[in-house]
Length: 172
Image (cartoon, rainbow, N blue to C red; front, side, top):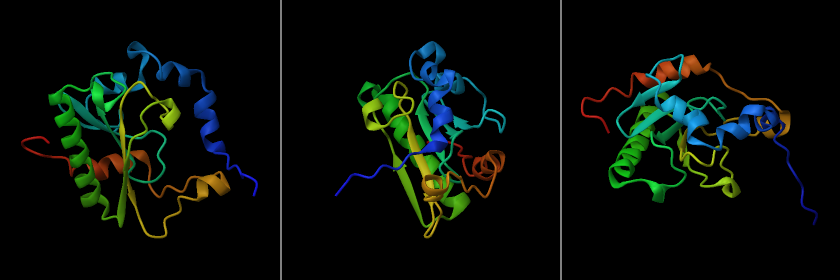
């Protein structure tokens, strides 16, 4: 049986852009480090932040509601986090999941991290977790077979929908 390959042509422009290599290298040019300094707003895509972690929209979402949870400090792996950073990162991930559950009422949720380039991380030097609501019968296959993304809402709509579910008086 021959191995078949499925090409993700929709990722080509991201991978081959001049900024792609720059974003994955140094703290001084990391797109996630730049985002960590942004105030939460629909324009920045940042939804919420505290001293150690933040939640932002994925600029290249796999589906509606695709969020990223990141430490504010530039580290590549979970084991690089100090205890307070790890606690905040884990609590912030839980906050993001709860907000997505409340905002979307999805049938399920994908939560995951790719640690390192070999594991598939697009930006391997800044730890991040993905949280993505899922529905029975959703169209996640369209990207692979039709070179098309099916997103029923804009990033701005996603931001507005989720941000109101992140109001917590005590933080995560």
